[in-house]
Amino acid sequence: MNKAGRTIFNTRILNPSKFHSKLYSPSIFDSSSLPIFNNRVIRNHQKQSKQNNIRFSITMALSFKPEQARVPPALQMPIPPITKYKIGLCQLSVTADKMRNIDHAKKAIEDAAQKGAKLVVLPEIWNSPYSNDSFPVYAEDIDAGGDVSPSTAMLSEVSRALKITIIGGSIPERLGDRLYNTCCVFDTNGKLIAKHRKIHLFDIDIPGKITFKESQTLTAGEAPTVVDTEVGRLGIGICYDIRFQELAMLYAARGAHLLCYPGAFNMTTGPLHWELLQRARAVDNQLYVATCSPARDAGAGYVAWGHSTLIGPFGEVLATTEHDEDTIIAEIDYSSIELRRTNLPLEKQRRGDLYQLVDVQRS
Image (cartoon, rainbow, N blue to C red; front, side, top):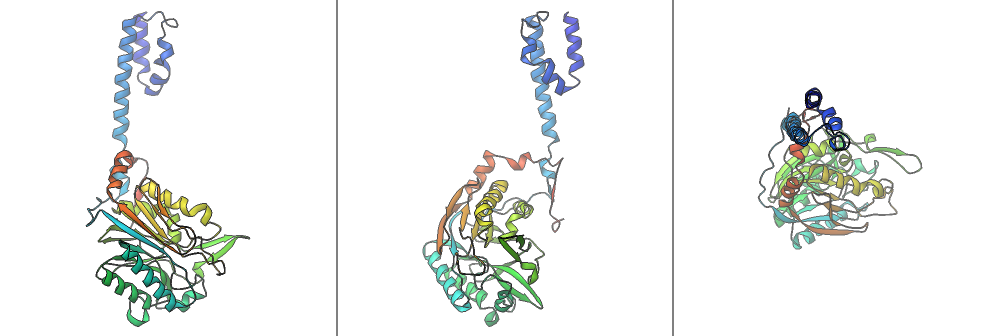
């Protein structure tokens, strides 16, 4: 009988799944159901089963190829100049008066800096009403600067004066005969160090709720934007860009610490998706996510949802506001990224043998 038992064992071990699920289930080794097995044989078979489990786990682990899940391989997250600092999210009311909007934004930035913010973020389209009719009228030639781009001139001046990093929300940009929805990043010397043109244009049609097509006037940007600053490596998106998880994954693979999305979600999708998307991008990539919206104006042609927010790398809401004009001052501590990645080592568990994220530009 022992010989028969060994024959069954040697046959079944060739198929690990059957070996685990059928032959060596606890019930089979119950002494009442199989009295033909003595205790010694049972112990030997259990020992062999355990060893086979270990071999099977090792084989599966070796088949995981996390280093191949990012093409090219993910960059090492750099050590930032500072690892803990305060961020300011300025949720601004926007009017049809451009110079008023510029002056108002300047005061909000100064107030955030006075409260200790080293990084200040403005909303999407903060110098203009959000409409296809307004974009051509309020657009600025950012590359020319000076008087033809008073919005960016102010951002450069105030960042230099206050020695802070500014993510300048977004403004309509004119380049030749094209218009873009553009975010400018300024360093502590007032230098324009990055310019992100909205990659995914906001074209939406929900009958009876909202219809808006940025593509009627705007041109889509052609490049992701990652920039090294005094407060770490930042990945920049604008509003609708947050819906595309591939962009956030790409930023994470380029070593970003913080993803920033100036945005103006509306009253239809805002309640459902705004916080959901922020938390998803944060928890997917184990990074901080910051968003900044205009304040809500119920009388405007386009009504923003508001709710500017800072999300932590575990998907937790660290700070948020309602829909009225407000400024959030909250702390970012990059050491929590390492902690969460230790708690959940997703980067080491990616199945590069099954799927890949390809960074076309880096490739």
